Length: 395
Ligand SMILES: *Cc1c(COP(=O)(O)O)cnc(C)c1O
Image (tube, rainbow, N blue to C red; front, side, top):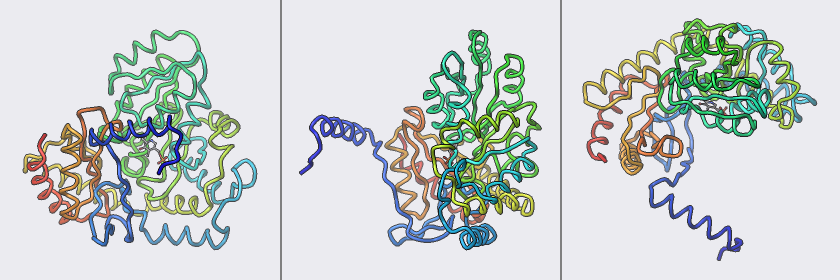
């Protein structure tokens, strides 16, 4: 029998019932072994098509060896926050390498992207300021804006006309525009050049979250900003994470030296949290170097994306126009996404269903992500099963 206080019990029961009736209950599936993209679940081997390890670096020998060497040298935990004693020469080297790679004055490492975004928005914005964000921005940007107590306005997806109106209406305090570069649930890319011009025109600081572009896009893997030729003068502050294409864990913010110094002094998500373990920094540093030395990973990923788009089109699988490794197949109801995901799971493909509140109601989807760790034959096999799954699980 539950010993929960009645007020909690009643609320939790109601919420659970509501989630269950709408097919919105989430389940975590523990992976038992295997390096990505092959995973073992319930004793069965599946091909993972819902991870963000875009370049297959999480299983790269060089990355693993760098982490091991750091473990041997520094032990596991960092032991304190960065400003106390948790910061090591590996964190410093990583920050220097990131600044150089991105062509920014300085970079600052955070434990997670969620926290980096908190630092940026909550650290720089407050009462009387305006934060304008794309409606499809990542939840971490939304939460950070809410916590900052600034006026927070969301503009329709990529709608720069509405954004301009919002900026025009705000005449006191500071202004900030925040956007994902590659939108995490849709895979499309923000109109960054235009946003940069609008930012300059309205004296609004443009912040770009390139979690899904960094490592993947751009000639040297430096992300969406490199691809579009946008430097620090165009985008004063950028962030990206190590948890996606770099196959690791953690994040960084890079940009103007004064901004970075201010964040170092004031970020609550930097000051009041334990520094990332040194091995995490070493792994990120190794992965960063691999962006330069193994460009074939980006080429291979690009080829798999092309193959997927072509194959889906041939089979009448409805795509959304994304050109990146994130390929959503929007089905509509949570039930059909859940059923299609289940069918694919039985066929040996792991694609988690994405449902509200992660995406707007009525746009539940299978979000396929491709990685350089996949093989062309696996993508073909996926397409075969996907076509059947969609046929079986119509709305
Ligand atoms: C994953 C992600 C984050 C959060 O990064 P973590 O390091 O996983 O906390 C932030 N923004 C975007 C767009 C993301 O996709």
